[in-house]
Image (cartoon, helix red, strand yellow):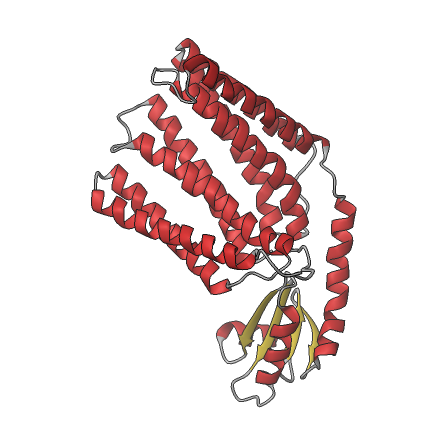
Length: 222
Length: 136
């Protein structure tokens, strides 16, 4: 939630307003900024809003108040925004969606597969040419899948922005499975082409994850 | 979610894509990228992707799970600066065979690690009841 306070250096009340709003927006997931009306950005805002007086308060770009508010008034003004964010979180639910559930489950399978290196080589990482197979079963199979599942579940709840769903997570999962398995089998069998194909597919799954996560991080909720 | 924490997660995604890309290029043509590419790849993925993802998420959730506000916002800001100054220096050092750059980058990266560790220790305190902090 973006909170902007428009102030002027010549305004005797602006410092008090800034103090009130800094306090009101601390620890609440709000993005608070002070905009000086004498600077180009502030002047443009004032012109757009046809401002007659400062300090003026904007919530998500909309003029909500002018003058100095008491701390109680500030919290009251923020209440609808907080309620909206709270409602959005409630709608998302708290349990894993099916795609994230499968990411987490698959991560555990890859962890057990990676651990087979301990039985086969006597150590987690072998010294032979197959070393990258078990290493990447752990890093890509276990760690990356855990990140996929947990980050896709948690980030929308932290920011209040939804993550791209539909076919995207399943495409991401399919590419990641084919990629990790292809990469590991490629190393174990010594098939260079399969290694490259596996690496490319895994990279594409990460690109899809980034594509899904970006609006979650930089969308309106913030 | 604090903008700095969103930056950590976003930068982690960029490093993940970059680290994967140089590994793919190396697999296709080992001579195309000069320097110690496997080491650069490993550190981009571990320090750039995994660690920065953990930084971003942990800085958000651990204060909330611990029940106390983050001990120091400036420490976390400097952690972001150090981590993102250090890793590019390390990568440049490995790709350009410049040990001094690797060392300087390593010091900055370690600085970020210490800042994070201390900030978390002082945030997630062993004693005290804590208080509720909103999730968002």
